[in-house]
Length: 71
View 1: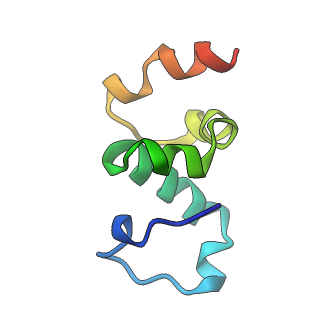
View 2: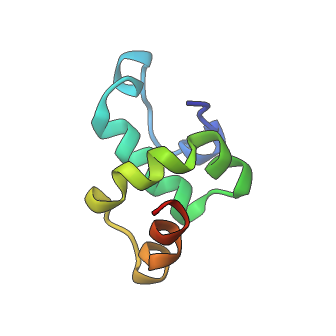
């Protein structure tokens, strides 16, 4: 998964951290709340769909639009 460094400017992660599931979930949340369409494409809809139940997102982002598009 391509990481947009502009989205993680306020944290320091080494390569080992970026391989962890906890980082991926944090990064997907960051993409959905602060990223752009290219960041979403880089993460991939399948990754977003798979992680969605475990992400802390505002209600308007968590909406059924994402789930129904992959259903």
